[in-house]
Image 1 (cartoon, rainbow, N blue to C red):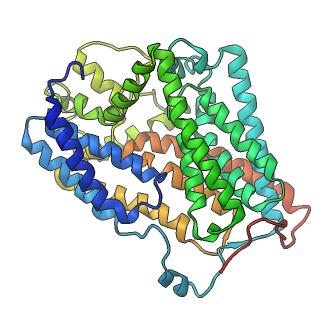
Image 2: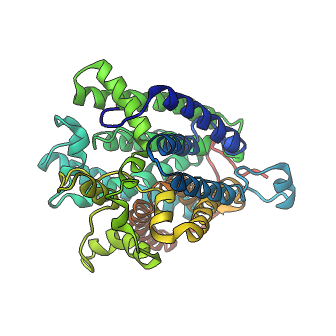
Image 3: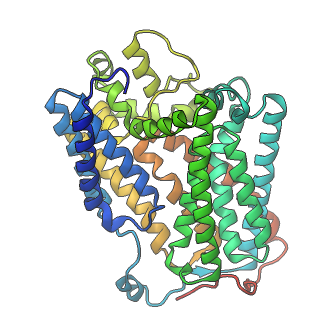
Length: 437
């Protein structure tokens, strides 16, 4: 790792040790190898490795691991999947409730949002091209959205999660399975054209969530989803390698780049724990945290000027000069935000709340009973989005706004249209999933 004075043997030993520790700690809460929790754990394993191998002051080690412990304590307050006791407690309530109007509302809203997504991306492709076809897709995925095309990035970031989530739910429940599968695959292609190496991972996560929900076990549709999951995961890895090959020009460079990016999940450790960088953030508090996280939304409405992302500022301070506008810098996860904005005691409480929030959203998806199909689609979307919270809370806030603001508007319009026409009990098509007790 160029520029870092790290001995390879301690690096490998500490990686193995922390991998074992995190796996043993969280193994009860991992529902699948495709659980997004695994990506979060990988990031925190490498954060721990870089912390003990790069940061010299043990004081920051103790604080970092206290925040990790606090997150773990909050996360483990909620069960991930319902147990037999939960089934008895709910008194045999069905998992879902159906009505023709709700299914039609979700179909209409998803179709309209899909049309908006396709139209916006075709417009971008016609006016600026697709980032994946540039010489450096990693930079193009940022630079191409500068100068009037930022709305496309917001559409892909927000609707790019809800649309396939809703389409997968409709694939499981409605009669038009081929159409909704086409919608999912089209959205996967659209996000892939954006040049992101991890674009397909979100599809892996949403299918994994759906396939491991208790209501869908041993169902023919679920078995099809599980087969699709394996194909999409293989494609996700292949797609990342293809993008890295385009940038490096060699197969070896692509594989090495993929391994390097795995380690650099936690590159914030390198940039933040720098004697030049850390003093810059001293004195910030909870109000600064709130305004920083809301800045992407307030800036969009021109209420306040856009701020540079925290990661960008860290790199700028570390190298002592302005950097390329196409470089946004590292994500700033919960353990760094805890230190910057809340200090030791407040940071532990913040980390605990973040951990609790993540597992609570997962619990809502896996354990909620008697939910409508619309709410279920929103819970699936939330289960995918929520892991952005511990990785970078500012990004999470922006994602939630970009997702649920337009979704709420389109759902409301669809409801007004449908409610005036019909309202009857929905009868699932033959082969579709039915509510289970």
